[in-house]
Length: 635
Ligand SMILES: [Ca+2]
Ligand SMILES: [Ca+2]
Picture: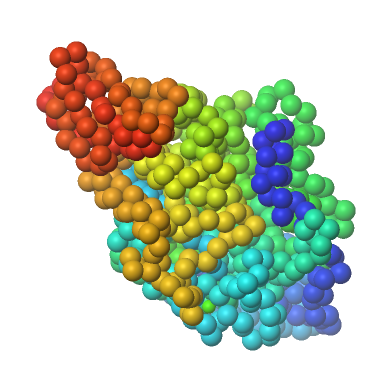
């Protein structure tokens, strides 16, 4: 429950949003038979997917017959949806089908409508799985860099652009990010995670912030109105493809953000759901998500409490999809397959992962991994207790007999410990205490570690986190176990909180300075940047720092020292959070001499054994020059 409350607090804005149903833009009234869209709009040849199902939406489609007028695809079963507004059509792509334009003939009420549908080539690049060798850089597309001012206010004019308003669009886009990718590659990150790219341009709802009604745009991307198109403010599908290609050319992996469990409040389905139970309803009196993650992890919880988590609408405003209807779950799985395959994702970040049935994730994983065995997924489970969070990492069945198959999760418990330690509220040993619980996870080395993300306050903005402590936290993040994730601007100590997601200085036309360059960074920003740059370089050259076994050596009030041991290398990391110098005795299994790789600490070989002289509020990294043969025997 406390986790749920934590979320409610941290997502204060979302939880206070009051959707005014009256602002829902009514869909254009349609008379007579019409076909408005076909999802997915394309598929690829050589697909192994069985049971591909197209959702045709329009009007007066009841009793329709569907034929293939052109192309090699074959139509199987046709199932009508709700109120003649939807058809579910099974389609087969024959093994030898060739790429080309297809046409479907939809015949109903004496009318025939022809609609195009594309059979495209299958990209040949295989995903490169992200893992402990990687460092992930989170970019909120709207807030990073504006490379194309022409798309800032798309035709039709919602006038949602205002850089002074933290709830409006700021103009960032694919072109801007693409232009800055070389900077990210030089910084030393190896993967980019973009906030969702779905079309949401017309999404515009009213938020009630502490009594004051105000507008809120979907700059963050989590309120889709079209799962098969990009937000035109970010760019077109081909602009997105160009961004992904450029990232791959620079050796950067791409992690897509998939929102499968809910739509935006203004999605067309809210007014015209394709089936009666498409959403957990009723739509006009939606059930509220209870954020009771513990109800899922607790074998003795009430089923009603579990349903309160999986079947409730996030903050009562995000229409929650009913994955227990196979037509809905099929749509969601195809959506993921479409983006991952055609836009060549290396990995996926899954939004609000615990709020969707675990049986769905098991099926999602099975089908996604069948198509892309190398693809990895990280689920967002905002759970602060390791015992609960470990339940959500795939790799073993839980008490419910379900292995969701999702490779990893974000390490919120370690994030919480880091926030308490580096803000001065907890002793340094609390980091070791948090890591002590790694035995609970199927694969702790795959946990995605972070200091902050787009839903949390910036670490730099936490009370008690001084610039010095912030830099120590960065050393910890980049040297402890796991896959580190950095939030855009963290490398310069960008402040802000989840209600104030700031633009990267220099990413936007007219910015007074360009913090992508050394000359554009303030002195303190440059100090932060240097720590990221140096540690990322070190990490790149040190297999032990990336994947070595973690052994705690010293964990007390102000000092935390640990070893990372690989097959060929041993590295010692020491942090002193105290303001005064610390003398840190090292245990016998850490013999000298050692070579200092980072920091200003001194290694002292004394008759009683080596110790470290660590200046106040400093960190150090040493490579132990031990005989390598010893490493394989002391495990
Ligand atoms: Ca733009
Ligand atoms: Ca749900």
